[in-house]
Length: 328
Image (cartoon, rainbow, N blue to C red):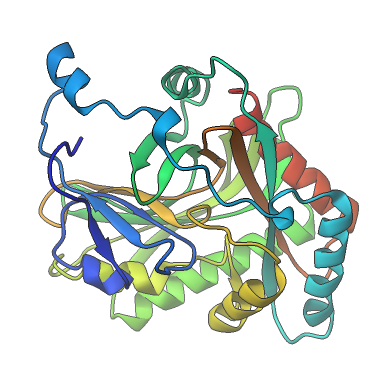
């Protein structure tokens, strides 16, 4: 918790070099959605008297700007799918990630804290967070995807792609070629990006992992860093990953900004603890929702290849939205 002063705001990921604190970064950095760094000035939870002085009441937050694109229907999704699949089938792009948002009315008595504790109990294999800043508003998420972590001098990132529902609460044993190829594309990208910085990594996987009621294919990359003061540079190279953007990276990123039809904001950015001299735990911000005064905005997406089928991809986003819906 930072109770005094202001959170630090950054316009580029590279500015996170040598920084320490809790960071929430958007898919696309802008004046409306800056990178925000919370600098801890409480090492323990304050007592009730202090909490009363610094309480943050959601009722006094400004209502988020809403527009029709944030209330995407299946018709909207079909229109976007048609525009996204074309460059894939024409071999102009290898992969694109199409996402959507779902706006639900906030029911009286909803407690973000209770939803957070419910998520902690329910999603024991994911990174659970509840984050509020004046710049970002309030976000709650349960994400399975590490973008960068460190423990005892060993650094770690993952390739996470391919999605299936659990089968009778068990991990599926068969994966189709679309899911395998999608995972391989992400793995190759991670390997090449690390190698471009002269970082030698070892890879384990792919193997199936559970994330809520879903399952993904995962590969782990582990490596050493000679010095850790330039984590912003490394994060800039990794973000956005092909798991939330596509390949080739820059062309896919620009295509999404021009054709997806809404602003992802902090969905598919990254979030967590940044400490170049200690433990770092940063995750891609998946399976999340933005909590506003009157609404919840939920987000979900899926990776498209040239072989992708509309109804399968729509159902995948429906399945992913359930992670947050279950908490409401």
